Length: 128
Image 1 (cartoon, rainbow, N blue to C red):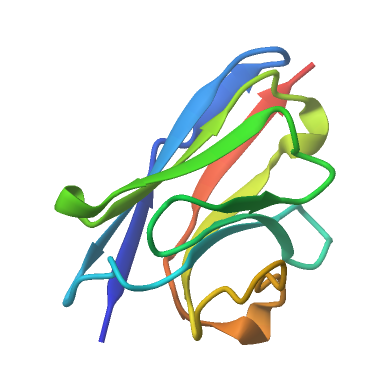
Image 2 (image 1 turned 90 degrees about the vertical axis):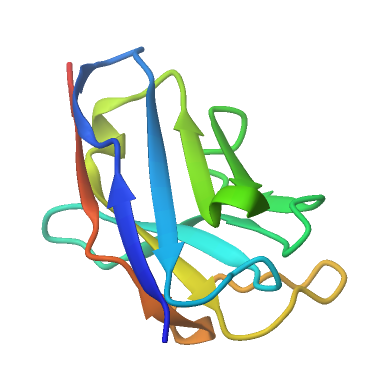
């Protein structure tokens, strides 16, 4: 079993930055691909970013590409999401998750069904 705890959310003005953290416990996730998802009010949860087990490859949704950066530190069993140039439409609860399988070539896990451990989420609110 893996427990994930997200932190770092909050209220920020448009154009600002936040850094989310996802700390894993229970076992190491250093061999797992990891992802960040988000769910805005009244909308379905959507994929935001993913990172390979090594951290050497990353993938982003078009809506966050160029503004968000996913990274990981194996020694801390933690994954991060650096969010810059935030927009009001980035307002959502952000979740991290452990992918069920590895990344094969350019085939990235982007569906919720491709992840099997989830954190409780952290709220990000961007004011205009």
